[in-house]
Image 1 (cartoon, rainbow, N blue to C red):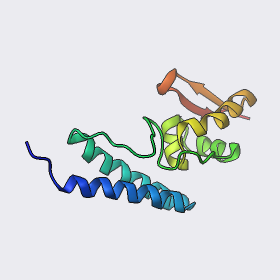
Image 2 (tube, helix red, strand yellow):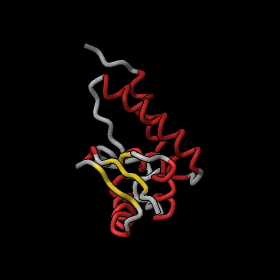
Image 3 (tube, rainbow, N blue to C red):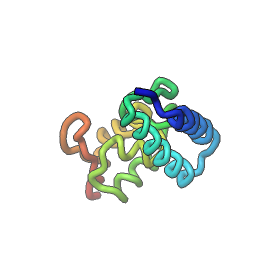
Image 4 (tube, rainbow, N blue to C red):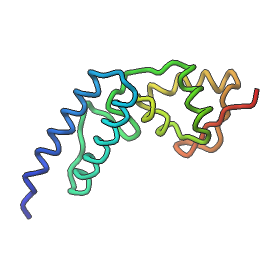
Length: 128
């Protein structure tokens, strides 16, 4: 079976999106680019191709390496109760590994309450 030549252009578009993501700090732009990148990555995955890109694994975002501040994470969780770490990371334009320190601080201070285990953990702001 021949591979569709369009897939080469899809892969190039993903690389271009990674560059665009690295060059902007606008949250709305980052979210839109991240969503578009996810859709194009799905096209490649459905065609049996592995999506590469800066060596990121499952749950990472195109701009991994950008650690969000604790207050921003707390505000997001308060506005979006029950969010998973992957959802929070995507919305804030970071990777889950970069999000983890902020979540740990929020949990230890009692600002956020986790419910569930592993990837199924959901985060809720505590009353107070």
